[in-house]
Length: 351
Image (cartoon, rainbow, N blue to C red):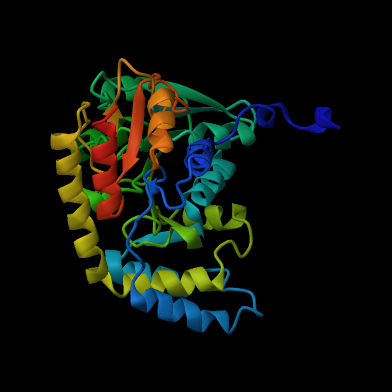
């Protein structure tokens, strides 16, 4: 029956760090340092937990399909913008593609970057078109603009996963001034840097900014994604969206987290401190990062070799060989708990 499966799903999908975890377990590490998934090691806000627990008592009912309470909380936190929500940033990405892309349409993707953009585009029948970044992984606006000509949708991640590169607001404005289609700006890690793209929503009607509650707000397990969208676009998104995508517990937890913004302040500060320490103390070059992770160049070794060696020593990091256009000698290391970060620096120095 395998012949019934669509061709785009017969190859490799999104790559998780499961193999490294299995190696660590095989070497007897019951509690390895988990630095592969860009998770927040700090727990969520107590207010988020309290509201989530309260919401459990009502899960016999469907959630609010409009996510009204969560959207109101987002406006209280960010300002007067229009928002949509879904199951993680991935749900937002899939729904946006669904509203715009027909079979055969080409979608621009700034690479190397998060591989799910291409997976989601192909799933909708479209074709991802990679636009390479410069050698320092910054975006060349002119090259990106030329690639967008005649195409409806483009993806750009900033801070970029996995390189950590932050694209300046001025470059985003230059792109939006010239392209005729929609730019999806994935800002999942924006809480960990000083750039602010939100004011651009007041100037441009061809911009969507994707955000998440998984990182700075410590709610990765509840899969809460949302996006700033132009007013004209919102009803089309809602028409295409899967019904009841964001469950009532997630909505309540998201509202609670947004009501307690001070909870993220020490989390962001800790990330800044450890990014600096990784850059200073790693024996391998570390790229500048605006996210809660860093990219490490482990050449002349390969990423797979280093991942396996670190996993055997109880440190799980991410090989970046699955990121299109990056090469085979980069690993991505999340900022974890202090003991995990110390363990990484200790073990990578021994390689």
